[in-house]
Amino acid sequence: MRKIGSKPRKKTMVFWFILPAVLCMLLVHVIPILWGIYISFLELDLYTITRWTQAPFVWLENYRQIFTSKVAVGERFLRSIYTVLIYGLVTIPIGYLLGLLVALLLNREFLGRTLVRGLILLPYITPDSVAYNVWRFIFQARIGIVNKYLLGLGLIQEPLIWLVGDRALYAVIIASIWKGWPFACLILLAGLQGIDPQLYEAARIDGATGWQQFLHITFPLLKPVSKTLLMLNLIWNFHAFNQFYILLGADPGRAHVPSTFILQEAFKNLHYGLGSAMAVVLMIVILILTAVSFRLRRGSSYEG
Image 1 (spheres, one colour):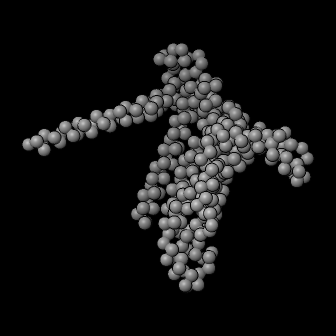
Image 2 (tube, helix red, strand yellow):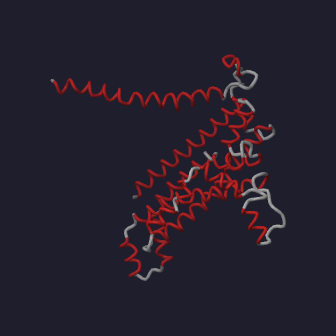
């Protein structure tokens, strides 16, 4: 009877232990998300914020505006989506290839390998505020070392402006690749170390070249890790904010991405309804990518 009576008490104790975490999740995540969704259906701006409880309910009008290219806010929001897609199409493949090449090198035996493995993580573990401020200095028009070397090599005749205009996205892409490729290297190196060395030994006995070993052993066995890595990078790509905000400032102009444009539209232009609608759209996109990522990981585990 004592054992039977203790079971409900244990369940009650478990509930009390997880209650603080549940309350924190509600306060930090669930309630703000629901509040943001509600605001996205209101015409909430500078003129109605003082009486927000009586703000007009406009249903899907905010969503219609942000997806209408003929409207200024819609044209800029759609352009920000295009910008973040171009940003991802360049940074993700290049970061993956750089990480894979370095991981293949670090998977070999050589003197000081452990030290080198630690050093390559320095760009990734450097705080964003430090790393991107350094890159901002590097891309300065008059005193930056990029223009200095380009002028010294005779590739340009006058200093280029990198952080404003059409070249701003190139500057962010270069800095982001430098910052992010060590993470890809770390994940891929872990995948390489999980491959059985006997497979390579058997392939060498059969006369397979190094390229054939990579093509038929290394790359196929890295597919589960690669899928997870690429999906994570794709999700983080739509979260891109720090690199654009630190390098280009609060108003990147034509180099806006969704997160920076939401910040400007909601908290600078004080169009809270429109900003919330954009945030909801961005959240839905990220949720879809996350669901696809879990599906791919599940499929990879079944294959394994």
